[in-house]
Image 1: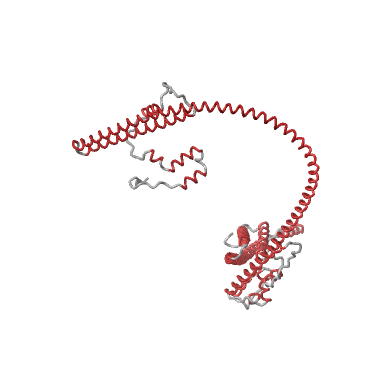
Image 2 (image 1 turned 90 degrees about the horizontal axis):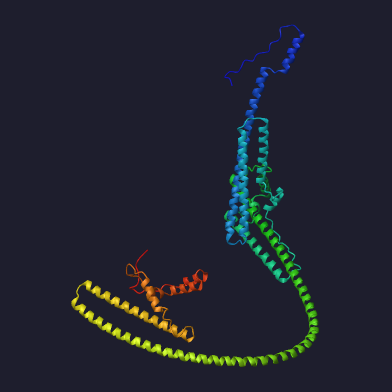
Length: 541
């Protein structure tokens, strides 16, 4: 735009005296606006744009103020609802359903708030665009949608008319619901009566909580409309619903906020009582349906029992006919059984005679085998006694020799190394003695096993000279084993196997139950043996 306004010049009239040229000039001037008219039109457009921009800015500011009021009211109502639910959490049995209802209301409020923010952002975005017809129409449509959304926020969907909202806030005494219990048995009547009593108790508890809240916040519970006049309260409700704007010159902002707080609390109480009544109706209807279903099942059972009784009577009649027929058949069968028993008795006597002969022959063979086994036992016992005597003589000789050697070592040997050598030899002697005892024990076990085999005929009396004995196999296996690089200083295998936990674990492995829950339960119940004071380990891993 130039700094100075351009000079307006008048159009030049044609110099010729031709009337046609003058008429043509006039027509052109009519069709073509002058520069002054164009400038005036441009200035008018600029002025209209500024006015529209100011008007839209004022509307946006008004919407922002209205939006803040809505947000504040929604936040206050949400806080009151949540705090009331928290107060009733100790005495309200239907708390989960009410919490779900409260959560759904909060989600709906958040969605409405996000929608308002979206409308606001769209309006602000349109303000930055060029001012043309499509943008103006788009702005107007979004503006109308925003107004409708704000009206929906002010006026809940549950109340189709303002009169219903006014009636809800009057808290008239709710009449006790009359429920038709005819056609139900005493048990179902008592159940429904108990449900009604429980819901009445919850309703009384809610009213008591509400009355306590009124007293705590300085309201008179016996006064209606929070201490206001009926007309003023209805005017307040109309204003709060967004239908009419009413000014309260005789009320301060604090009184309006206080009355709005009371109004929200009263509305919330009415909604909770309505929800309780609706839930009670639902439950009673369900219980009636259950009672009808129970009666229907009882009637079906009675019909079934009657059919069963008739069927039993028919079967009894058929049974009497069959009994007569079976009586004749039993008599014939008895005669056949007698003949069969006589034949079986003859065969049994023959079989018993054959078994007696077989048993006598078996007893004679068993007696001969027993005599042979006893003779072998005597012979082996003599051999074992002779070996035992030789072992005792050898042990006495070794003890005397060891005693003599100790005396000689005490006199001749001095110093720690000689004493260690003596102890080492003693340990070796004890090891040899234990080894000999182990061999003797193995021999005795082998002899006992051989006796068992001989007694039951599992092995021949004469041993196979080419087959190596068990002791020889043990010695060969011991020679094949690799000698350790150092002497073990830990617990011996015999000490470890004495632990009952090891024995139980081995038994569970043999039974195939090691990985079963039963094995885990048994092992966890067992405790370790308490070691001797000298056997306790202080090593920490």
